[in-house]
Amino acid sequence: MPALMIAGTSSHVGKSVIVAALCRILSKMGYNVAPFKAQNMSLNSFVTKDGKEIAIAQAFQAKACGIEPNELMNPILLKPKGNKMSQLVVLGEAVKDVSAFEYYKEVGWLRKIVEEAYRRLEEEFDMIIIEGAGGIAEINLYDRDIANIGIARIANPSIFIVGDIDRGGVFASLYGTYRLLPEDIANLVKGFIINKFRGNMALLKSGIEKLEDITGVRILGVIPFVDITFTPEDSLSLEDWNCGEARIGIVRFPRISNWTDFEYLKPAGIKFVWKKDDLSEFDIVILPGTKDTIADLKELKSAGMDEKIKKIAGKIPIIGICGGYQMLGKKLIDRGVEHGNVRAKGLGLLDAVTVFDEFKKRTVQVVKTVTGDAVIIDKIKGQKVWGYEIHKGKTFASKPVFEDDGCASDDGMAWGTYLHGLFSNENILKAVADYLGIKLAKTKDWIDKFAEIVEKHVNIELMIDTAEL
Image (cartoon, helix red, strand yellow):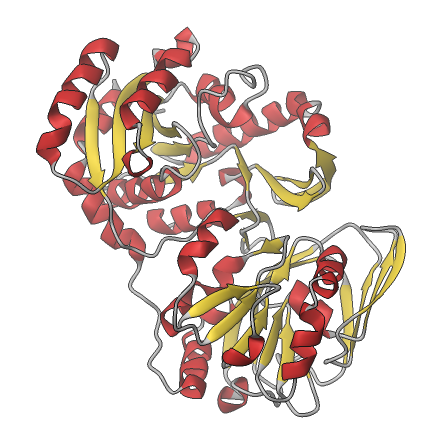
């Protein structure tokens, strides 16, 4: 069955969004298409309708295809925890924590998991759009690189290598990447794509001709730099979110996760804050999710951020999401799950206690009714909201805000919830906008806008032809 693979010269060249665009383009052309990424390392994750956890990038790509995401589209997810450790999620289920060295010892059985997942998708769809990971030419990893070399040998796809010209050196990076590939993989490369171009196309002509001449590989498109809000894959992109006139401050934990929760708040002006920032300058302060609540709570206290948060309590709304919600409580008790037998004092703004007593996580999509008396959401009490939970630990709390979920302070100025995706609800966004006295609505789907640009600047028909030969 035909497959296209979008590989990169490095991370952050635009692989995820180009895959999403191709998913949208091909689905509109009538193909029954699905995304696939063998292994993703990301702290932005999503829960499927079946309660399986995958990287949020593959969830967006599935959305671009017009299909429901499932765990086969991202069979291996690594969630960094710090201290060179990552949580290993296999087919949507957390298995264990591993170091890089330990992970590579698991490659044998994980490769079989990847192949089985791919073959199952292959039976159901007309075409698979594969996303590589990082740079495809990691010569030190060829024997264990499941996400690039491994999946290429399983799927035998047409490979297209993407380079980021905005970083400079795009011709050298494309040439070097291609020349370093094993011969069997290089034979699968059917084209190059240059991404994020800002200049005059005429200036590229001689470089394109030279690269095509010395490699024998065509450049199938030059995608212009576009100012579209994409869902970010890594925390390096968070600096791009900061706004000079920010109304909402979001605490940037060292192990911050699922910051995509706040994508629709960007038009209000947000800033990721830490040590030196004055929280009193914001209208709303949010404590987001974290991959390790107790470790980041310790970091929060070491940075003096706990006192800054307590200082604004009762004056400015403080919202905790998932790990941030756990921190706002009185106590966190670890019974050997993350840090041995540990008791940590929370910020004490909510009447809540969280207990970590098993490795297994709760991963589920939910629809809840707003039931609590809490600032901002009190205006939509009785309305429904959608979200998804991804967390270890059970929280025992009074004054819930979404039926049996969350907790609010007595004055309603601080509240927390386990619901990721909360700010993607139109009624929640309107409640935030009303509180801030601004207009705030979900922005137009970036996938459609970017797909139009890719279709205009990339030879899609030739890409398809190479896959169907």
